[in-house]
Length: 263
Image (cartoon, rainbow, N blue to C red; front, side, top):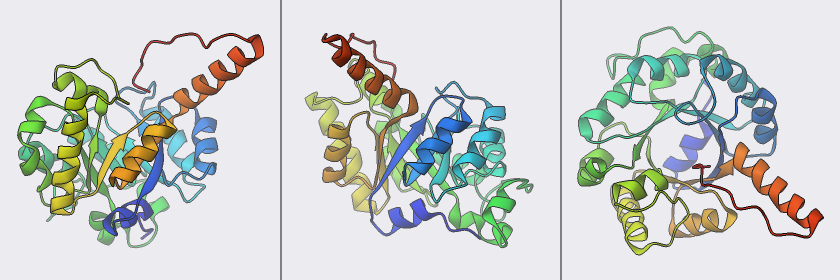
Protein backbone atom coordinates (compact mmCIF):
# COMPACT_ATOMS: atom_id res chain seq x y z
CA UNK A 1 0.00 0.00 0.00
CA UNK A 2 1.03 3.61 -0.55
CA UNK A 3 2.68 4.94 2.59
CA UNK A 4 1.14 7.85 4.45
CA UNK A 5 4.19 10.10 4.12
CA UNK A 6 2.95 12.78 6.51
CA UNK A 7 2.06 10.27 9.23
CA UNK A 8 5.44 8.55 8.83
CA UNK A 9 7.25 11.83 9.37
CA UNK A 10 5.17 12.68 12.44
CA UNK A 11 5.87 9.28 13.93
CA UNK A 12 9.58 9.89 13.34
CA UNK A 13 9.36 13.22 15.17
CA UNK A 14 9.86 15.22 11.98
CA UNK A 15 8.03 18.46 11.22
CA UNK A 16 5.70 19.13 8.31
CA UNK A 17 3.89 22.14 6.88
CA UNK A 18 0.38 21.85 5.51
CA UNK A 19 -2.30 23.94 3.90
CA UNK A 20 -6.04 24.24 4.37
CA UNK A 21 -8.67 23.99 1.65
CA UNK A 22 -11.94 25.81 2.37
CA UNK A 23 -13.08 26.60 -1.19
CA UNK A 24 -14.90 24.11 -3.39
CA UNK A 25 -12.44 24.37 -6.25
CA UNK A 26 -10.55 21.52 -7.85
CA UNK A 27 -7.95 23.75 -9.47
CA UNK A 28 -7.19 25.51 -6.16
CA UNK A 29 -6.56 22.10 -4.59
CA UNK A 30 -4.33 21.13 -7.50
CA UNK A 31 -2.40 24.41 -7.36
CA UNK A 32 -1.66 24.17 -3.63
CA UNK A 33 -0.73 20.50 -3.93
CA UNK A 34 1.76 21.43 -6.63
CA UNK A 35 3.13 24.22 -4.42
CA UNK A 36 4.80 21.46 -2.40
CA UNK A 37 2.87 21.29 0.89
CA UNK A 38 3.55 18.13 2.88
CA UNK A 39 -0.19 17.67 3.37
CA UNK A 40 -3.43 19.44 2.53
CA UNK A 41 -6.63 19.25 4.54
CA UNK A 42 -10.01 19.58 2.83
CA UNK A 43 -12.39 21.17 5.34
CA UNK A 44 -15.91 19.72 5.44
CA UNK A 45 -16.66 21.35 8.80
CA UNK A 46 -16.41 25.07 8.02
CA UNK A 47 -15.24 25.07 4.42
CA UNK A 48 -17.67 25.78 1.56
CA UNK A 49 -17.28 22.19 0.41
CA UNK A 50 -19.53 19.14 0.22
CA UNK A 51 -18.92 15.47 -0.56
CA UNK A 52 -19.37 15.93 -4.31
CA UNK A 53 -16.60 18.56 -4.27
CA UNK A 54 -14.39 16.19 -2.30
CA UNK A 55 -14.64 13.60 -5.07
CA UNK A 56 -12.91 16.03 -7.45
CA UNK A 57 -10.48 17.63 -4.99
CA UNK A 58 -8.93 14.42 -3.65
CA UNK A 59 -7.84 13.18 -7.11
CA UNK A 60 -6.43 16.65 -7.85
CA UNK A 61 -4.21 16.43 -4.77
CA UNK A 62 -3.32 12.83 -5.60
CA UNK A 63 -1.39 13.83 -8.72
CA UNK A 64 1.36 14.96 -6.33
CA UNK A 65 3.23 13.60 -3.29
CA UNK A 66 1.12 15.76 -0.97
CA UNK A 67 -0.81 13.72 1.61
CA UNK A 68 -4.59 14.34 1.42
CA UNK A 69 -6.44 14.77 4.70
CA UNK A 70 -10.07 15.69 5.41
CA UNK A 71 -11.53 17.50 8.39
CA UNK A 72 -14.95 15.91 8.80
CA UNK A 73 -17.90 17.96 10.02
CA UNK A 74 -18.23 15.95 13.21
CA UNK A 75 -17.44 12.68 14.94
CA UNK A 76 -19.77 10.75 12.65
CA UNK A 77 -18.61 7.25 11.67
CA UNK A 78 -20.66 7.32 8.46
CA UNK A 79 -18.90 10.45 7.21
CA UNK A 80 -15.48 9.32 8.42
CA UNK A 81 -15.79 6.02 6.54
CA UNK A 82 -17.10 7.72 3.40
CA UNK A 83 -14.23 10.21 3.11
CA UNK A 84 -11.71 7.42 3.72
CA UNK A 85 -13.33 5.35 0.99
CA UNK A 86 -12.95 8.39 -1.31
CA UNK A 87 -9.19 8.32 -0.76
CA UNK A 88 -8.37 10.50 2.24
CA UNK A 89 -5.25 9.26 4.03
CA UNK A 90 -6.48 10.62 7.33
CA UNK A 91 -9.23 12.52 9.09
CA UNK A 92 -9.17 15.44 11.49
CA UNK A 93 -12.10 15.07 13.88
CA UNK A 94 -13.35 18.27 15.56
CA UNK A 95 -14.66 18.83 19.08
CA UNK A 96 -13.37 15.62 20.69
CA UNK A 97 -14.29 15.83 24.38
CA UNK A 98 -13.17 12.57 26.00
CA UNK A 99 -11.52 9.20 25.49
CA UNK A 100 -14.75 7.50 24.45
CA UNK A 101 -15.23 9.99 21.62
CA UNK A 102 -11.59 9.67 20.54
CA UNK A 103 -11.87 5.87 20.58
CA UNK A 104 -15.07 6.02 18.49
CA UNK A 105 -13.32 8.13 15.84
CA UNK A 106 -10.36 5.75 15.75
CA UNK A 107 -12.67 2.73 15.45
CA UNK A 108 -14.34 4.30 12.41
CA UNK A 109 -10.91 4.48 10.74
CA UNK A 110 -9.97 0.84 11.39
CA UNK A 111 -11.18 -2.39 9.83
CA UNK A 112 -12.09 -5.23 12.23
CA UNK A 113 -10.80 -6.59 14.48
CA UNK A 114 -9.14 -3.25 15.36
CA UNK A 115 -12.22 -1.15 14.68
CA UNK A 116 -15.60 -1.06 12.96
CA UNK A 117 -14.89 0.48 9.54
CA UNK A 118 -17.08 -1.11 6.90
CA UNK A 119 -15.25 -2.51 3.88
CA UNK A 120 -15.69 -0.75 0.54
CA UNK A 121 -12.64 1.40 -0.31
CA UNK A 122 -14.00 2.28 -3.75
CA UNK A 123 -11.40 4.91 -4.68
CA UNK A 124 -9.14 4.48 -1.67
CA UNK A 125 -7.85 1.09 -2.80
CA UNK A 126 -7.14 2.47 -6.28
CA UNK A 127 -5.14 5.37 -4.84
CA UNK A 128 -3.63 3.36 -2.00
CA UNK A 129 -2.69 0.43 -4.21
CA UNK A 130 -2.21 -3.27 -3.56
CA UNK A 131 -2.25 -4.17 0.09
CA UNK A 132 -4.77 -1.49 1.07
CA UNK A 133 -7.11 -3.88 2.85
CA UNK A 134 -4.29 -5.40 4.91
CA UNK A 135 -2.32 -2.22 5.65
CA UNK A 136 -4.84 0.63 5.86
CA UNK A 137 -5.26 0.30 9.62
CA UNK A 138 -1.65 1.34 10.16
CA UNK A 139 -1.53 4.00 7.42
CA UNK A 140 -4.73 5.98 8.03
CA UNK A 141 -4.26 8.87 10.46
CA UNK A 142 -7.03 9.64 12.94
CA UNK A 143 -6.37 13.07 14.43
CA UNK A 144 -8.46 14.44 17.30
CA UNK A 145 -9.04 18.15 17.81
CA UNK A 146 -8.84 19.45 21.36
CA UNK A 147 -10.67 22.75 21.44
CA UNK A 148 -13.40 22.58 24.10
CA UNK A 149 -13.52 23.02 27.86
CA UNK A 150 -14.39 19.34 28.31
CA UNK A 151 -11.59 18.34 25.98
CA UNK A 152 -9.12 20.33 28.07
CA UNK A 153 -10.44 18.74 31.26
CA UNK A 154 -9.91 15.29 29.70
CA UNK A 155 -6.68 16.15 27.90
CA UNK A 156 -4.56 13.32 29.27
CA UNK A 157 -7.11 10.60 28.56
CA UNK A 158 -7.69 11.81 25.00
CA UNK A 159 -3.99 12.02 24.17
CA UNK A 160 -3.35 8.51 25.49
CA UNK A 161 -6.19 6.88 23.54
CA UNK A 162 -4.65 3.86 21.74
CA UNK A 163 -4.39 4.25 17.98
CA UNK A 164 -4.53 8.02 17.89
CA UNK A 165 -2.51 9.47 15.00
CA UNK A 166 -2.17 12.94 16.46
CA UNK A 167 -3.74 15.93 18.18
CA UNK A 168 -4.70 19.11 16.33
CA UNK A 169 -5.42 22.40 18.07
CA UNK A 170 -8.11 24.70 16.72
CA UNK A 171 -6.92 27.94 18.37
CA UNK A 172 -10.08 29.99 17.78
CA UNK A 173 -12.43 27.43 19.34
CA UNK A 174 -9.84 26.91 22.06
CA UNK A 175 -10.02 30.64 22.78
CA UNK A 176 -13.81 30.46 23.08
CA UNK A 177 -13.46 27.52 25.49
CA UNK A 178 -11.20 29.72 27.63
CA UNK A 179 -13.69 32.59 27.65
CA UNK A 180 -11.64 34.64 25.19
CA UNK A 181 -12.48 36.19 21.81
CA UNK A 182 -12.07 33.72 18.90
CA UNK A 183 -8.56 34.67 17.81
CA UNK A 184 -6.25 32.09 16.29
CA UNK A 185 -2.86 33.79 16.15
CA UNK A 186 -2.71 35.34 19.59
CA UNK A 187 -0.26 36.11 22.39
CA UNK A 188 -2.95 36.23 25.08
CA UNK A 189 -1.22 34.67 28.14
CA UNK A 190 -3.92 32.15 29.06
CA UNK A 191 -4.20 30.97 25.47
CA UNK A 192 -0.41 30.66 25.14
CA UNK A 193 -0.20 28.69 28.38
CA UNK A 194 -2.99 26.34 27.31
CA UNK A 195 -1.38 25.64 23.93
CA UNK A 196 1.89 24.93 25.75
CA UNK A 197 0.09 22.57 28.11
CA UNK A 198 -1.48 20.59 25.26
CA UNK A 199 1.84 20.39 23.44
CA UNK A 200 3.58 19.28 26.63
CA UNK A 201 1.15 16.41 27.22
CA UNK A 202 1.55 15.29 23.60
CA UNK A 203 5.34 15.36 23.91
CA UNK A 204 5.24 13.41 27.16
CA UNK A 205 3.24 10.61 25.55
CA UNK A 206 4.92 10.67 22.14
CA UNK A 207 1.79 11.76 20.26
CA UNK A 208 2.27 14.07 17.24
CA UNK A 209 0.86 17.55 17.79
CA UNK A 210 -0.44 19.99 15.20
CA UNK A 211 -1.97 23.45 15.25
CA UNK A 212 -3.76 25.80 12.90
CA UNK A 213 -2.06 29.09 12.06
CA UNK A 214 -2.85 31.78 9.52
CA UNK A 215 0.46 33.59 9.16
CA UNK A 216 4.09 32.90 8.39
CA UNK A 217 5.16 34.40 11.72
CA UNK A 218 2.97 32.10 13.81
CA UNK A 219 3.75 29.06 11.68
CA UNK A 220 7.43 29.61 12.37
CA UNK A 221 6.78 30.12 16.08
CA UNK A 222 4.76 26.92 16.33
CA UNK A 223 7.48 24.96 14.56
CA UNK A 224 10.10 26.43 16.87
CA UNK A 225 7.93 25.38 19.83
CA UNK A 226 8.11 21.78 18.61
CA UNK A 227 4.82 21.06 16.84
CA UNK A 228 5.12 18.21 14.34
CA UNK A 229 2.60 19.73 11.93
CA UNK A 230 1.38 23.26 11.37
CA UNK A 231 -1.04 24.79 8.90
CA UNK A 232 0.60 27.73 7.15
CA UNK A 233 -2.72 29.08 5.90
CA UNK A 234 -5.74 28.43 3.71
CA UNK A 235 -6.66 28.89 0.08
CA UNK A 236 -9.08 31.71 0.96
CA UNK A 237 -6.60 33.26 3.36
CA UNK A 238 -3.73 33.23 0.89
CA UNK A 239 -5.93 34.80 -1.78
CA UNK A 240 -7.32 37.54 0.46
CA UNK A 241 -3.95 38.41 1.97
CA UNK A 242 -2.24 38.76 -1.40
CA UNK A 243 -5.15 40.59 -3.02
CA UNK A 244 -5.63 43.05 -0.15
CA UNK A 245 -1.89 43.72 0.12
CA UNK A 246 -1.35 44.34 -3.58
CA UNK A 247 -4.55 46.35 -4.00
CA UNK A 248 -3.59 48.66 -1.14
CA UNK A 249 -0.09 49.01 -2.55
CA UNK A 250 -1.42 49.88 -6.01
CA UNK A 251 -3.71 52.52 -4.53
CA UNK A 252 -1.13 53.79 -2.05
CA UNK A 253 -3.56 53.21 0.82
CA UNK A 254 -3.86 51.06 3.92
CA UNK A 255 -5.31 47.57 3.61
CA UNK A 256 -9.03 47.41 4.28
CA UNK A 257 -9.85 45.96 7.71
CA UNK A 258 -11.45 42.52 7.53
CA UNK A 259 -13.55 40.55 9.98
CA UNK A 260 -12.00 37.31 11.27
CA UNK A 261 -13.31 34.25 9.47
CA UNK A 262 -11.21 31.50 11.04
CA UNK A 263 -9.03 31.28 7.92
